[in-house]
Length: 553
Image (cartoon, rainbow, N blue to C red; front, top):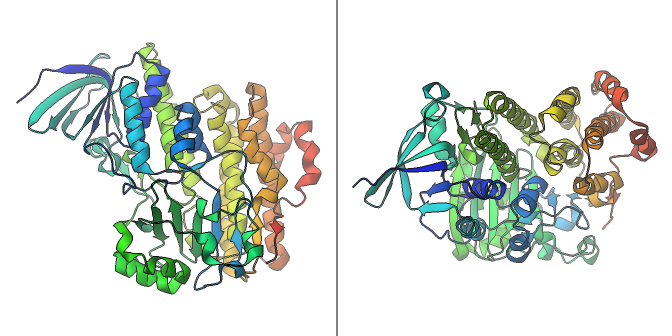
């Protein structure tokens, strides 16, 4: 049976994290907008639902908390994350005797460990309460997209089934948020592979994994205040791989292995038994913790090659892609929710401009270019970098660099609501290009350094919270800046990254004098042309940007 035709302002294909957050953002921007969300899965979602994306970082956390107004839920129903933490524990059962990277206290800006089932059920309830029409159990059967050439008012059409009932709806905008199924991507041939060939396996255990109990050394335990390392996104790292441990508020623990297939083939870990055998060899402490909990296994899944791009994600023809329907990079550093936040913000702006009668072609093109620039810059953090992950000398430096790049540039744009400010983006074009070029150069230098590194693994904690400039960079995300102050903030970040790059080279060449450096002269000239007296004042404090407090056991 076919129902009568209904019209909506926006139809969102997919009612998971990306689709529901977009619907909420659209409603917060314009309560009068008519949004229909079609979700294939029946409601409600189970707790500890089998989805990657449980750990948030600052952009995603700020988006959920402040942009969408979900702060109370995050504080009451999810777990506050104790930052990222890394242990060079390959083949070891003495966690207190290896190098640890991580904060000894909470930094200023909160982030969270998200139980996706609990969170997506709450998002659905919020969406319905705010007037979004959510249809669960719906299967999209056909999608017809129109172009401006067919007339600016020509609507798109979506046909779907709900049980045995067939439905067709029209919409001015269609947004694909259906995940890797990629309806619009397949229809318009937008798939674009990248060169990042890593794979992942992951599973949930219906119990807590208390990493703090893996050593009874009181000095090791007291390095952190509070003594809750288990609330971190914990990484057990080795050459070519990392293992995550993420706690969920439902009481489950998420475990994943992410690896470069050239070093650790998927065939060695693509079942739970194989993964356990692999852990027994490479991360025996985690194997010990899981071996007695085998009966508490909730699920298991894997992706052979999880990373991919997309030729286009925003169109003036009134369609867009968000979340994994568009692109996905890597779960290391948890950027998935960040890219949902960024993509949804661009989509919300385009739909709002369209409803105001504005022309979209130039904006849609500019937003798409900037979004892809963020994608390329972030992809560089991972591409060919997995062999570094087992290096206790180089990975700590990489983590500091990557976070300085993230907090100093991309996060500043999001927190200060400048993503869609094309005038600021234009004014900072030179600085942003230099930052991206410098990042590529530093990533290459880190790879070269790791080839010759001695990979010393002393029993120390590299406490990033004890680096004043690092903690301040995190805190600075909460500042309120006018346009001139924001422009100067990015220019100062440009100069700071240049100084940090120079120190990275200096540190590496102290042990390896023949290691080729990085040509910083072009960036230095550009930075000096715009650096203010205020940005020069703290120069003395940057003489040892890489210094971390080292707590001996």
